[in-house]
Length: 167
Image 1 (cartoon, rainbow, N blue to C red):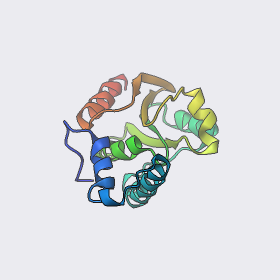
Image 2: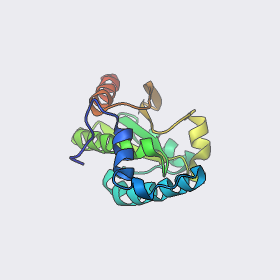
Image 3: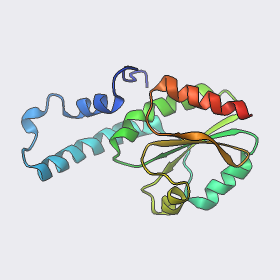
């Protein structure tokens, strides 16, 4: 988690570069074969790195509503993401670092929702998730602030801290 991409650089590009750098000679020229080739590398990267980015998961609308009720007096930060999503994997370290930084605050809890899971499709539609990764903050059962879609760590933390003013 210490090797976060540069603040000014694109974390998506940084992960993309890790996946293909030095392997140019293996890249297929055919678009369909290239997509499969890249997908295999993305899957391997995800398998290696996803455990480092784990945030407690919510599965389904009932569990989501239960967590809202349990955390009425806290800031609840939800990360919507999906497997094999390059931006999700790229921004995952920011989200995990933020969770670790704010974990010491008893008024803030983090959860994640994998929108590729069948159980979460209705939840994602209900929350109007249009792309991933998307972050939403909740307090007293209501969303506070706007959705955050792509950002660097500093802006991400600024958004969460601004949302926490409602506590």
